[in-house]
Length: 309
Image (cartoon, rainbow, N blue to C red; front, side, top):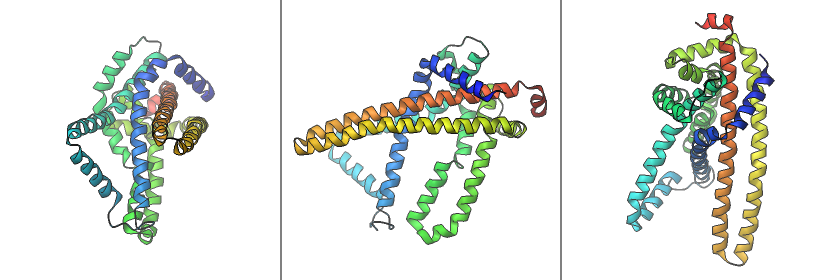
């Protein structure tokens, strides 16, 4: 298997299918980015208000919830819109990324084999295959790096550094265990979407495929990691430009008129959010194309196919 050729073909596919990026990747990336910003902001202020730094009498979560409720009670007309927005955003975040990923994998695979497939058909398939793929994502989410670091942060904030030192070996073991599980289950999504296997069957088949083709999987993984780091650096550089403008604008506004700084900050914030979601969406389509092409190639090899079947 020519790994560089697969990556080059996947990039060509990503470049030539902008509509797939906008409809199946941009909105999920935007939602995930917004949730990630909220999560990171919460972690930052939760640590800032914890006994490690501030030793506040109430946690940041309680303080934030109290402040939001007080604000909504003061402006009672905002209760219904706030609840509706929260429910809609929550449902979209819960449903949209999984549905779009299933549809995207299906579209990429069909396109790879030369079949003509419409985006609407891919979306319909994503809805049909949604439940088993969501079940798998929820199952492996407990071993993700974000979950493990979040749990470690909770222990440090609420139980102290001494307790964290006791639990540190456990977190390290879980982290290493999660890494190997993530590696073994690399192709589980593709078995679920493209071969309609059950969650357990897909995880078992993925582990076998990774073991049988560990060299190809390792090479593709390393190349994707390097490409991902390079794109992240480019994104950071792009985001630094509006950030510098924001700082400059804030300084000028603080000297002249404060309202200008607020509006300028909001405007530049939206630009940064849009650019981040855009680059993340491109990387998402590209990564799915690379792994879909790799999966189809490996499944086409007779010796591997016989071992898994």
